Amino acid sequence: QVQLVESGGGLVQAGGSLRLSCAASGRTFSTYPMGWFRQAPGKERESVAAISWSGGTTYYTDSVKGRFTISRDKAKNTVYLQMNSLKPEDTAVYYCAADRQIGASAMHLANSGYENLYWGQGTQVTVSS
Image (cartoon, rainbow, N blue to C red):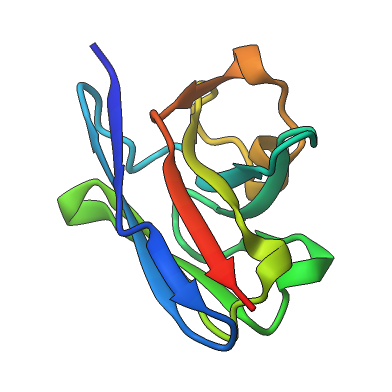
């Protein structure tokens, strides 16, 4: 059974930093893209960042470019999201996701619908002003 477990969320002041981690189990994800989505209250879930299976290609939504960095450790089956210069508008539940399609691109994950991905349970990130 595939499991994605996020950690690292919390409360931080604007301008601060957080690092999210997502540990995957139940399958070797080294040949699948992984990424992060977020959902703020009253808004739709949106893709934030994604990384290819090799780690060589990344995707970021425009609002986080230059502030967030996605990375992965294939040996640990773990993906990370380093979030710097956080803003109140970054407040949301952050979800880790893994593609169900082997060898897919980072962009494929970022554009995939809910049913095409594996999901973690989410971790709350709150940025105070």
